[in-house]
Length: 224
Length: 112
Image (cartoon, rainbow over all chains, first blue to last red; front, side):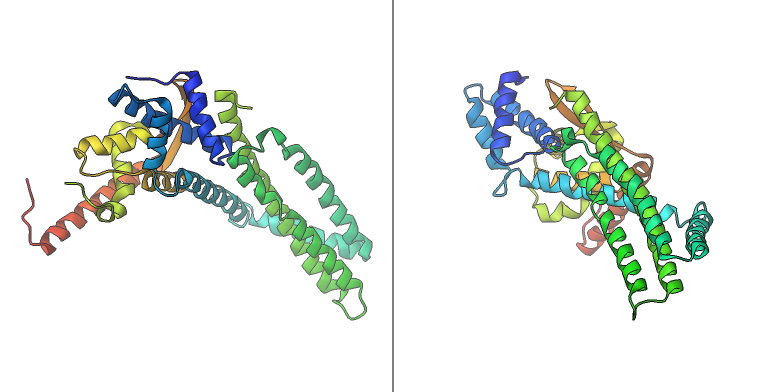
């Protein structure tokens, strides 16, 4: 059976790259499939050149070319990480953790009433912000930016700022003359901060899964 | 005679699960070739249909994947997960029931 050598595989990879498939995990899955077909074509017809076999393989994919595979990978990864994220998030609302979550939110609420000052809200916000920034910094892996798995999984970290922005709005409304009363704002604020913590843990777990998947592929093939 | 894609569109997941049940682990291209060989070319599982089904099954937790370097390139192998084994049995049963009903509807005698 004909097997492509390293140089020939490089030619196939270059053909894939030229068609705009920039993610390494997508390139790897495409490369194996295309290479298998090219090898088969060259086995069937030993006169066929590598270029003609590649062109024929590409044509067999139809009018959308290799996009069908990339779209499938993207849809699959999105669904997989979505499932992981929501499974983690909802697990905190299940029987195992719900009491802990409610107790934590209640403690946050009591802490602010105890201090009885808007400063307590800013203090809580700062306490949430600092570890969040630290974790975001730790999870930022530029070496994986060319992996679709990493890009999609770390995307769950993006909306974290929205919780903090909403919390800031609540503080602002609470301090406004015609805004929310202090107790109402403290309840909403504590709820938002509780959601922030749950979202943050779920997003970190999802991002880590993306990093692990990208790392596995990188280690196996020593991709850059 | 080649069978139209529309006829087996709804059974692609069943075909994949059943092939993996019988063969243990397989990679994408191998699945397309296996379908072609078993059906003597009557069914052609195209990439545009295979990969969405494979990745959907993986995302739903029915398949597990491992990557290995084979012939100087990375190859992704698919295997059935614990839930996938149960799903494979269910899907095959469902397909068999469907075929029986179809045979009744088309007034054909089941082949033995």
